[in-house]
Length: 340
Image (cartoon, rainbow, N blue to C red; front, side, top):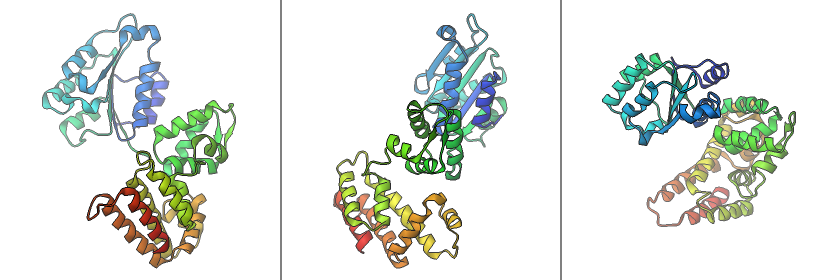
């Protein structure tokens, strides 16, 4: 049956187990959370010696895997068999391997918990194999959270750490990291080390421990462009160019395109309530004032021209009609965005 990752984790914590879990999808955090819980919590250290099997998709066949799954546990009630990186398993893509698994799904070993951690991809739910997976076992499809869901996730995770977080801190964390749940949780765990239970995470803590305070990052660049601060924008681009591995040009370009696309919407909206304007451009209301300031700094005509400049830079960065280096393209772009 199809279930959510949260429901499955709650059932596991209550001691309610299914014989087969097929966890798939783009959101690696949920796949890792379920896999890690089953791997670390269901068996004692002594029981794991003979009753925990970890296989990797590239290295195992379906026949060998199911032979292992069908054996009985030693000196305990359960054995756990986990296939990590299951998306690399060749037998999941061919008819023979699929038929072997479908037969096992109909007659699973009740003393085995078999887990497939199928990252980044999903089995076609319209296929006969996909339909059988959803009927015969616990199937979890882990999807990326929408931006409006991030704040709730952050607050819930922080609560589980026995901490609280201010609205501003949650907004900064969300803006700095985006919807990478694995990185968000890792950063919050690091913060937890420096705090006592019951503490509140503030925006100053996020800046101090996660690095938003660093002067040369994309958020500082965006802020400088919003303020039409050309010297600072040029300085940041120059520093980014010196470390192209960490600050690749195309992702920076995508963020700047997103910025001016939002300004274009604000220039044409008839809405006057800031919180509703924030909803129109899909940002948290906390950040709307910066965008309203940018509307004052860039006219509608300038905003449209800047979108054209960004499109031209995108083509140049992809090697179309250009032999110019990436750093030179970005430096020229910054000048054009502010001076036309």
